Image (tube, rainbow, N blue to C red; front, top):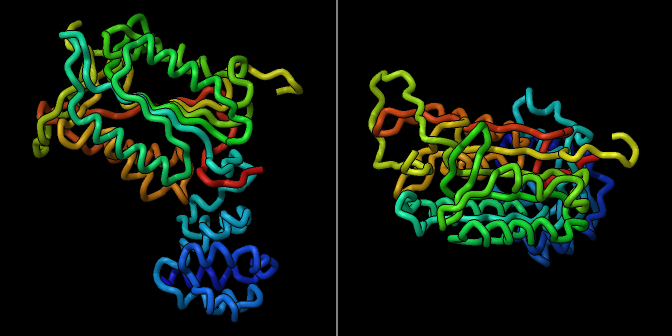
Length: 347
């Protein structure tokens, strides 16, 4: 076991002595931390913590997974928080949404690649994004629904059908749309493959407290990988190395009691700022999705979503297109009351 992991385990083992080892044993075996023969000699928590450090470099993270499967979320969260830099360890369970169901929630990914109208180019590289997003959100713990190449009417019907699912037994919901987009009169729109557009707020409204009661008090997370206009950020030209060929995701032509607000517990992440384009690499996918996937893969167990989005923005801040253009993302919360930490047994 890594020395830092061993130190964390030693410092916290006294607080874990009351766990029921018999509840853990099936998961310890399933995750190949111990063999069946080894488990016969582990009679209590003290025996477990004596042997656990000798079970290899991955034993610590596997053990956290075992604790969660056995519903010891508080104990697992404490070990995870011990891995964080000091400034992040102040997060308490009472500050976080409860996102501990199995699955954590349902995740809809709509990926529009091929367009039927001449003024919207095909979005080469988007399949790379969609495949990687499905993989990481499934790993995080979501049940994935994927849809490809939807005209506006069908996209709307899919979204409406998804919003009418019963979310009673899950703790969150994610909608991720990859398509062309634009902005008019200070409103954002997402294009279907037929060139017809849907207002973003209409999509978000499908999941508000009035229309989707089974998501009340639960976080609803929206990611939009799309342009929000045709302008671009020229930044400051200071001699960055040119990047591979890119194009843009834009149109190529111009409580109290039982009374709740209509919108709450909503977090929206846009790949770019209002009126600006969003850069997409034909081979590697969009800047936003590339950096988001990298950050999620590294930090989803230990950081809240907003902090991870800050890290994504830091990565995008350093990028420069071959047209010497820059891009930063834009996030906003609607009545967001707590931190969003995946696999967190909040209070």
